[in-house]
Image (tube, rainbow, N blue to C red):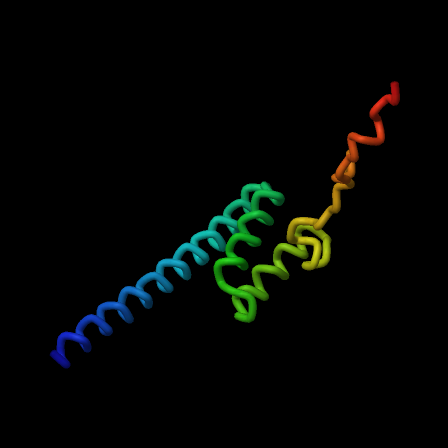
Amino acid sequence: MKSRNNQTLAIRVSAHSLANLAVFVKAFRYARTAQEDERNRFPYTAAMEWSHAAELFGTTTPAADYCWRQWERIMQLPRRLAGPLDLKVPVAVPAVPVDRNLFAVAA
């Protein structure tokens, strides 16, 4: 019984490490594609590929930092502008309950 639990744990660990490896391979592919796009004079496509690679590498890795620096170089923008902007859209009609008795006509 004990060995069976160890086998399932080993399978889970190897599946998890295989998934992590697949993410890194995909990130390296994005980085390689970004280099090719820059060589072929598609700078904005390359910037998009660099940002995808950086997101896949993680937040604190040197590889992600390198990818973000490449993105900053191409876009000539700081890294904080790489994400979506948090724009607050005002509500056209405020959601206030209406008292219909105020509109009743006294006869």
